Length: 393
Ligand SMILES: [Fe+2]
Image (cartoon, rainbow, N blue to C red):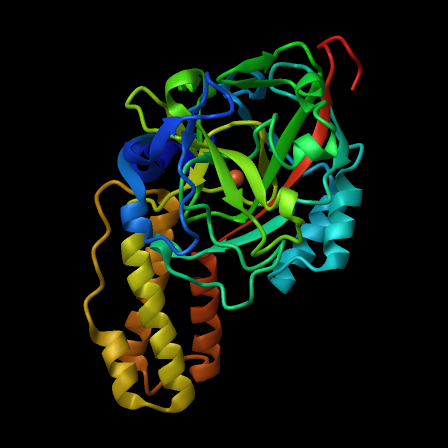
């Protein structure tokens, strides 16, 4: 076990956004399923969701045997795939996914084979042309995306708990002419296919994830009939779609205290999650301590601007206000980021007329520390086949 794992807190509490009970009604098309009202795109997030405090188990601290086929998600090792590592380095450097990187990413994964935790070999057969997304999410919900949103870039972390695709819904229904439920392994409130070896999976790769982590539910703790809800998501603001496919059929969820949640307090691009696209509940949250990081981020940004503008009063103001304290329970990477950022501000406070590497050197280090607390992740959808244990890799 790494030193990080020895120090990490096994559980902490964070707030997740669920569907409000007032927005739920019986579905008019599928009698055994509930539906959630589609929210306007400009809805006020604080009143639109049912925010609940949930206990999150940190996979860095507990050796929980999570596995895809029972819990709906599983961490995998990406380090053997060198072609993938090379293209992830380009995405990290460019801070976006270009069309060229998208093509190289798909090529590096097509046909890739790995062994799941339960011993079964899995092969990625196909990487979907849609659903490749690069997300940038600031600490505590701070907006850090200045670019215009398109299909792949400019996306923040997902604000609420959701499942990415209804196997009976748009666009799968049109793409496979209604054949998706027979083709893919799935479990919905009104149907299931437990025999197929074919999975529709999300591959979620964190380039860095100190803040705003992906949280995933242990699927066994979900009561689909009571808490899984059809949801029509408008997608024309970032996807080119005709009228018939202007709403994606995804899943929303109601909260229940029996649901169990997992996250990883620090993942990099050497590891990723595979999770079931067809209903695995997931979302992003702010961890305890992120509000202090957000404040430090804003003060470092103000100090950088003041140094560039030569504004001594603004620089003094940014350096001298007291930092917000960290809560007792937080993660090891958040504590380390906090120390890095407060040390930079202390350096400005004490030595602003005599910075060791000059203002440019300080600005460079400050921007690197700020960048480090932005969660960056790449996600894509893939069709995979899982073979029996005895099948050779
Ligand atoms: Fe998602």
